[in-house]
Image 1: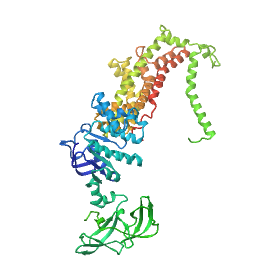
Image 2 (image 1 turned 180 degrees about the vertical axis):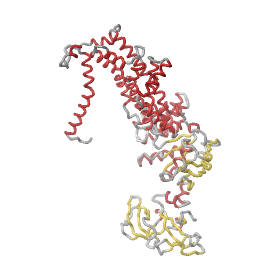
Image 3 (image 1 turned 60 degrees about the horizontal axis):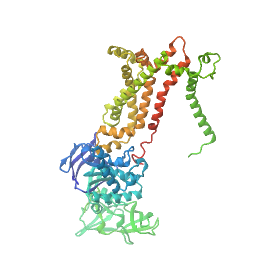
Image 4 (image 1 turned 30 degrees about the horizontal axis):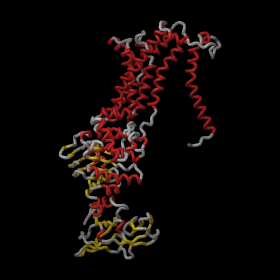
Length: 356
Length: 283
């Protein structure tokens, strides 16, 4: 278990700055997930930690050792690649044992270690096969096994599940969580899938345009997104953002109304009266109600069995969505209105920053 | 499988047969010539099938060690083997790291380096032969294996480098980065990963290199003058250069000269079969 520390880290490719001023402390044994849309720099950041990309400026520490000039092979960091990157000409046993072979370990120790890892990952029966002869999920496990071989202090995972089908992805996700508890290693995991991030992470780092937007526990990000980017990124279907304006400043709060609607909503935050607002409400917090302030016409309803997604055009926003439990009888073209509890309001400025 | 109409099938197969005939007929005719008597080969109209088959020409070349033709043939065979194999080995030793660096390491100047290397490969031998000749003469290397090996390396290195580079390019970069993180240095990566993965390409490069060196005639003709260094193409040409050309003997020498490269191709065929990459990255 080792702590990692990134201080004022920048990365430039020629003239283009892809990573801006990253400051991040990762605790020993922590499971940190980097998440963000594609091109946000999360993989680049991971590769900089691994030593595959140079750090343009800033400091990187592994434990109490400065590491930004250290070659990848000396960082004692293991990495699982999105493509698995198994060595096609070696058997699975040779693949897993390869880091140890490079470390000039005696053969008995390598064999023992490979057996141990294979039993953790349930690969014992396959050790004599080559990567071409096993399935995608098994390949993924071999890639993880190779990363475990050297008992690394830090394990990096670059979108490790993105090439698997949905069922296998779920299974491997649970296995990874188990493995992290078992190994107590520090792990950094890169993904664009917010469900993986929410379920695996101790802490999530949300990146956009090469900058950290927010760091926090999964539920922190869900309940208190710092801006509309995080609000829309975390949660599925994504949060509805209704443009709104202040209608009345009261002593115990503010009355606002959604643009295009005459109904007023009460919020208990003081807001500058000529400020543009966006009111965020998650689809799962919308409850149908005849007197609801959010009105619209249903454009489509997706029945998932366990719940129903209702898409509707409201006066303030096209394609808003509500998520109702169970099966709903709502039909396309119907008028519908929703309410939401004040606790579930997220208030942002029109630029997108959180107000309360 | 997609169903093909009868006409398509007929066209595909007949094209294949025609191609086969074009490739094999000369070899077959060469073999027939080599077992025919001189009389059959010189009568008019030509005797297509020999009246009696005789392997005398072969015995002349490899069986009867005391005859002059056997002496020149066997020496030439030895010279050709030494020159072709050494030149190939040395070229690959230089081409593997060169191709790796051109394929993997950063730097804009590397690209122009490859272009220059290819450009030298394109130059006609005639343009180089005079300076090379006087250089070899002043080093005292005329009529030696070393001279031919050095010249062939000059031809083979750009070619094999280019061939290997394009093959290394096809290997996913992840297969370089994974061992790097596993603790390997560049040489270990090349040795443990790149070369085994690129084995089919290595086999192909070695085969092409041996063939090019084996068949080279121009430099061999100019830079050698007796059994100490003459290679097979030159020796076979010598058989034809006398006052009376013995077609049977020439043909037998031709057939024998093809055996080493053909058998090499046969044994390398296994490693030439690709598909080795399957399962390494993704699925």
